[in-house]
Length: 98
Length: 512
Image 1 (cartoon, one colour):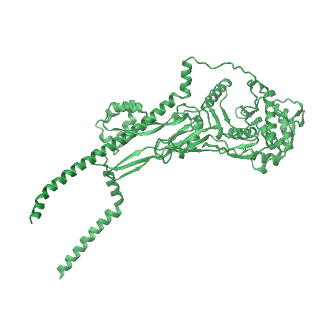
Image 2 (cartoon, chains in turn orange, green):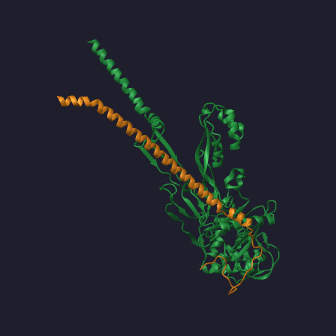
Image 3 (cartoon, one colour):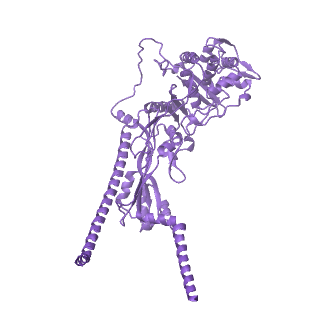
């Protein structure tokens, strides 16, 4: 009889404990959700950054950029080529391969 | 007793009403309610797929995806539409009136203002932090080499629903491979819109489009485009095209036409420039065609390089008289000299020796009148007249490339067969397809190589060797020997066709 009474008396305390546990658990989940969201956003941002950098590399290494920079640096196109014949004068037809 | 019956009927009606209502909510309106509920507690994030890159033979990109944004407005959240318009229009380079008109249409809650907007412009818009102005990420095409190889690449426009769609060239032909598939993340959210960690999460990864690696070499392409443009300017020509094909593989090393357009700003150009004339337009091949006919005649042993004929005047074919291109006659000529002097009379002699049936069979074997299956969207082929519709005069004129139509790519492929020991190859622009599908975005997958495809053996290797030497002789001693650069041994043939519309002259050259 005394045991039943003790249990009945502890029910409100147990309920309060469970409510507190529920609040803590919910709070943890919300914080975790925010972290997941922020990680997803960071992944997306990094992916965009990668694309931007790839475009920047492509732009910097394009022939368009290279030709402008080489002209700025004083390189010029050869105006008259010199040809040196080595060995037999009967050369293979251009592009012909064995 | 009647009270019991009344109560019973009321209970039955009450439960029937409940059942009917439940039937409506669960069966009839079930789908839409589920969707509405899901919209309330689910968060859906789109993971955009990246359109594949088109790179040259050493991996340098011709076309790639670049970050851009859709700029939109939510009119119901805008307090002062005229002030909003005044601030946004100049940054977007739009007219105030057009934005204002879009925003004041009654009932509209979401209005797209501009697509494919650069990040710098978006940053500028973000600085003025206007309520009711939003941004959504989307990709746009970037061309590091600007308009280089434009007609080879094609461009990316929009379909009827506003989604990206490739048009013409490689973008059109390989659109399904290049575009990939958007992914999404669907997860449960709390009242503030943040994801719930233990809730249901569905994640479908974006499948990036496949990337293309071409046979085309950007350095060769640049040189070709530069020389073509300067040549056209020098001679006052209306247009011109150059194709360089590896005869062993069929790989297109370079393909250029002038005039062309800028694929990043395609809408500013005339639509007639979108089609690549090398695969989509036909022309009369003129004397360049003689090498095909002579190859056929040698292959059939109808003539040899040393076979002699008399070019002592015009030749009569029925009621028609066929003359040489300059009305000059050289007397006794070998077949090698017929090619060297580009003699129409000599070609009629060779074609007659070959005979009508074999001539027509060789046209088919060289791929004249059939599409080459090059991997470019807009390829077309002019029709060849039916096998039984050839008359003697048709045989005679076609022997020197008149009265017959080809596309430049057909002609290049046919002549390349001579350079390839007589084997006709299928021309290809794409060398490899890099498959990123089924993998997380940004990760490269397996590479599928497109192997060179031999279509058929047209002439024997011996005939090809003889014909090559005859073409070398034509370059060394023929009409255009002045154009031969020193230090090279080149096999080639020039050609001219007069088009009787406004006295246009079409000059061509095929070189090995």
